[in-house]
Amino acid sequence: MLEVMVAFVLCAAVIVGPLAWRIWSDRREAKALELRADISATVNRRLDGESLVSVQVVPALPWRSGRVMLSAPHGYETLIDDVSAPVLRQVPDDYELVLKAA
Image (cartoon, rainbow, N blue to C red; front, side, top):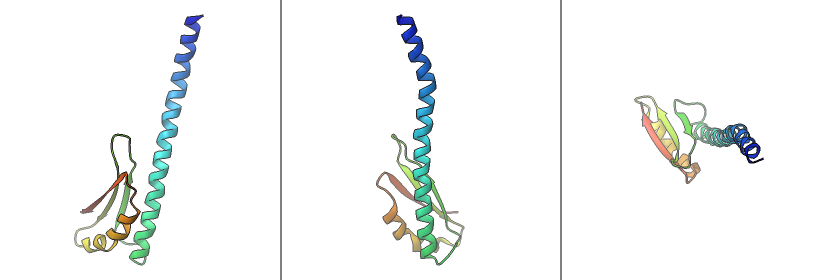
């Protein structure tokens, strides 16, 4: 009887474990995509339309904070300066803002 219970628990763990991990991972990525959309909208509003500023969001993990990265090509760094203050107000506490000029 004990062997059957152990086998059942192991089989359940093999099925439920990856499923739970995938659900958790999908929720993290969905939150990051929502944040990226909000920040991109802020950047586009601030600069009056699409610009050369790129917005990337890396989701947070329990052992690492998330990252919001703004980047622009060389020579267009002033665009990042124009949008950094409004974007910083939108960045959650468990994320960090990274400004890059390529």
